[in-house]
Structures are given as structure tokens and as C-alpha cells.
Amino acid sequence: MRFQTPLVPARLIRRYKRFLADCTLEDGSEVTAHCANPGSMLGLAEPGTRIWLEPNDDPKKKLKFGWRLVDHENGHFTGVDTSVPNRALRAALEAGQIEPLARYGTVQPEVKYGQSSRIDFLLSEPGLPDAYVEVKSVTLSRVPGLAEFPDSRTARGTKHLGELSDMVRAGHRAVMLYLVQRTDCTRFDLARDIDPVYGAAFDRAQAAGVERLVYRARISPGEITLDCAL
Image (cartoon, rainbow, N blue to C red; front, side, top):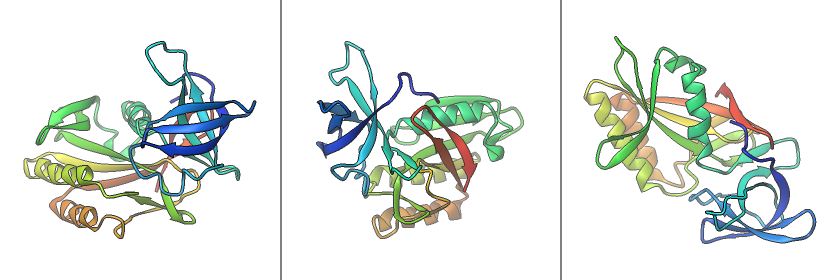
């Protein structure tokens, strides 16, 4: 998935009200960017952090920049836009790049299911059980090389695990797919200390037959694509 417009570097001044970030561009001007991430962004929103913004000239948007990346200034990046995984993974699913799901020919995004929920992707193929795929963006790393989810308590994520379990009981496949939006991580685990309720719900879902897949993204200021399984 290529960014629609070339990203520009900046320094973070502060993130506030969850979806707003004041930033300083390289020419010294200050702008407010949209932060498409409702999570805590633990470890990613320190003042002075080097970041990358995507400009836009859409007259319908109040903010002319969107915060897309954290630049760790050591050759590694973190993608902070939680809408990116679904866009990148749709292309990967349609291209058959996710091996455990490569046999499915039809990929439908945002299909209603469960209790007033929408599954990120419903995969179907004649002769195969439908596969319900829920996607989560992973950006937390507290130990070098280790990515963790979640970065804050997530009642919504716990609800999704229960609904995926229901799909398995109904005879379908259900997959929890974590996309690690960090290039500096080679391992993944649950942050059970941050949300023990989610951790317990995950264990119940796995026991019920919900599958877990973890992939890492390949990230640069030009694009975000699927890298490898972790």
C-alpha cells in the first residue's frame, strides 16, 4: 500500500484528545495533524519524536496532515495509522500472500456478523468453510524485538474474540490476525499485564478453535506492505 501523497518529516510537539497531534515541520512551521489511532500509543508519542506526516489538499478535511509513521532514527519505523492494516492486508489476501488463507478466492471487507459487529474480512471459496478474519494493529514494544498487544484495555477486542469463537461453533473458520506495524520486532506476545481480561478471552478463543496468525509489515516513508510471518 503506497501512500497517496509523499510523506514529510516532522517533530512531535504533543498528542492530545486522542486524535490530534501538534507537530513542527522541517521549515519550523507548526501544524496540527490527525492521529488515526485510538489506542494509548505507549512509547510512541513522546515530545520531540521524529515522525512522518501525509499532507492532503482535500477541502472536506479540516486537518491538512495525517500522522502516519514514527521514525526511530535507527533505520526502523512504526506505523501508527490503525486503518493501514486492513488496506495492506486486503491486497495481500487477494494476492494469496498469506499462506494459511491463500486458498480463498473471495475477500469481502466489513461484513456484518455477531452482535452489531463487522468482521474485517470474510473469506469464501467453494468446498471450504467460510473464514472470518479479525485484524488488529500491533505497535507496542517494551522489550527490544518483542511486539505486544494490546497497548491499553480493549473491551471491544475482548468482544471480538467471543464472536470469533461463536463462528467456530457455527462450523466456520475464525482467525485472529495481528499485523505488527514495527520493523524492529521479530517476536509477538500478548500484553497480559495491561489487559488480563483480553488475555483470558484470547485463551478461551484459542481453546474454542480460533486460529492466530501474526505478520509483520514492511514499512518505509513510501509504502507499507506485508513482510513475513512471526
